[in-house]
Length: 265
Image: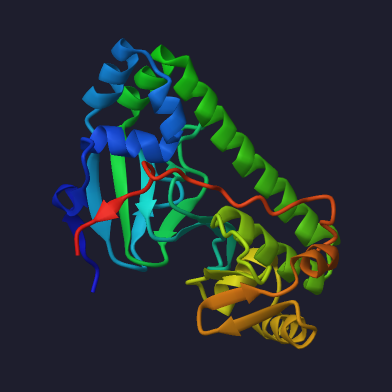
């Protein structure tokens, strides 16, 4: 059953809703370094929250989206759909991602939730006015757009030049990075991957069967271990080598204690 409900009452913490959203989107250190007048502008932004179930469309491809939104919790996906019904997943959208920020008149892709999500939305005109008055926020938005651009380049290379093993290994390595996973004392790192193999196949331009075989081979070779939706990377250097990404280091985003969304039970 599709459920869309107001979620302002679910957000708890010492900060007001606008400040908490700003800390998630722009990062706490950016907000802390603002002057008093800029912090007041941030606190006055009229964000509203909604809680969505999984498999809910946030906005459709071709829609004239009037709001800019931030994913506060849960996973979504960005996709394009062809007239014959085939889809290409362009990106998986994780907490902190910016939705509906665009240069064209209409959205060239759609956003659909994968898991239950909480999103915060602000009228686009208010969002553009806010970042135009506070350069530090505009710089952070530029960084977010740049990060998305890098992932888009990776997807082009995946589809054009990488083998199935390279694509799947690279996808897992990227998820280690994007989920902020940090290796433990054993050197292993583990994270939840709440998406299906079909979704992975649609993102990597492979068949479901090909993804399944490749994951099994990576498991047999000691690169990863999978238990349900939990993926444990046992050999990150080997995984990066398989992905032809030895030049990268999975950095793991270390968010301070002031970041994140606290949701009442």
